[in-house]
Amino acid sequence: MKKISTIARIVVLEMIRRKDVYVMFFLTAVITLLLGSVNIFGEVGIARYLKEVCLTLVWLFSVIIAIVSTARQLPAERENRTIFPLLAKPVSRWQLLLGKFCGCWLACLLSLALFYSFFIFLSGTREGIWPLLSYLQAFWLHCLFCAVVVALSLLGSVVFSAVSANVTITTTLVVFILLLGRHLHRIATRIQDLRGRLLEVIYFAIPHLEWFDIRDLIIHNWPPLDLLTVVLDTAYAALFSAIFLVLAWLRFRRQPLD
Amino acid sequence: MNTSVPVISGKQVVPILELHGLRVEYPSREFRRQAQVAIESLDLTVQRGEVFGFLGPNGAGKTSAIKVLLGFTPATAGTARLFGVDVRQPIARQHIGYLPEQTWYYKFLTAEELLRFYARIFGIPRGEREERIGYVLSLVGLGAARKRLIRTYSKGMQQRVGLAQALINDPDLLILDEPTSGLDPLARMQVRQIIQTLRQNGKTVFFSSHELGEVESVCDRVAVLKQGRLVALDAPANLREPGETSLEQAFLRLTAEPADNGEAGA
Image 1 (cartoon, rainbow over the protein chains, first blue to last red):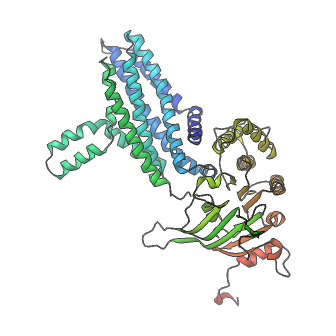
Image 2 (image 1 turned 120 degrees about the horizontal axis):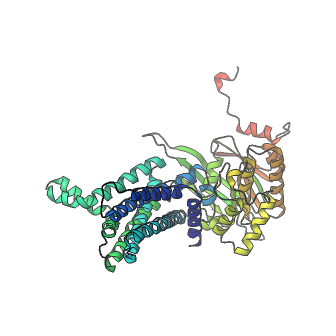
Image 3 (image 1 turned 90 degrees about the vertical axis):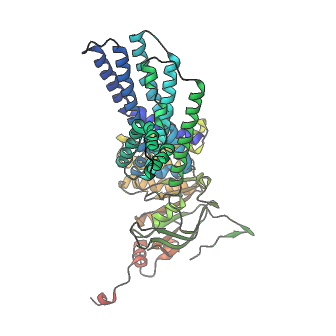
């Protein structure tokens, strides 16, 4: 466990010392505040509009942070050859993978904490209400989303040799699931032939990342989710993260390092 | 060539490093192309306290053998053991230090942070850790630059950081891959001095190098590889034939390609 936490700590330290997260946070703050300062259409519910813009940016940047920071971890270790002195120590490959996963997920959590603090402050000061339980649920489900994406990106980094290929494919997959995942089953039931069955299989095989997205609940100030839903979502994220990590390990454990 | 395990007063001494019937093949990525054989059947043992040179021309299989020893590449056949433990077990690497040929260490860390990271991996207790970091950094001459980010280091300093990380756990076996590659003469001399110090402390050093003069001056035994096969294994002085004045001449003879019949008379 100590080896895993040591590797994770280095990943987080790298994230803190790189400028990527700060740039994205700065962009989110600037864009949101800029849009909040003008009311072109005389919109009455400007606070909701602002919340939607801010949350969309947070989701967009969280996808970028989770995928890009994870995708470059193992290829950078190979390219700079730091993987050799590291694996020449008493560290197994599953410990390295788990350390990278924990580090990347922790880095995402820290980034999300920064983004959500800004969002909560912004929406709270605009609307004058503080539905903290809903915000906490949104934050936690977003963290779970990041866990699945980080595990998926880590799997991609041991399958694809180029970082760009991994980033492109993982991003496409995540965006596809977020946008179309919930509609697949409906489409599948309308198609009666083999294509319909195939779509149904895909629907049940993919991780439904859209289940972690409760932006609408936050934007429209709907009541929070019940505890059981959050627990089931947590178990669902843990299951898919574990599946992706096991697949990554199966691929990585005997892979020659060149 | 003597590769057998020595017996001291009826009790078998476990060699620090042993390779038996090692074969390494790299599968071809092209369809129906035969796998490339990097190492044929290789048998080798290194005893405690030895400084062992691992020589061969480029592509002879030295790096492949080192990669198998460190668990980076799986052996196609045969066994590889460190301290009597199969190299596939991470615990086999608990008492070794490894210096790769060319590595760019984490640029966002200072030398001190890098060594702390590796020391934590080895599970060195906190108090001992800081003491050890100070010792190895002063040993490699980086005491003054310990708080500087590694990205600001010169190539020679990077190599010395590499040596420091290889020594952080006070290893019983040090595996060095081209330790003096790219270093200036002064830094080379320092590396040689460090190897000598380690030998005096009873440590085992296994290193590959193309600097034959250096190998001759520090090694107890050397192994010469050619096209994946062991062609010589002995003390440097014993490898020389009458008339040969240096290890380099012996090395050139041992690794020379056989002359093509058609060109022999040319």
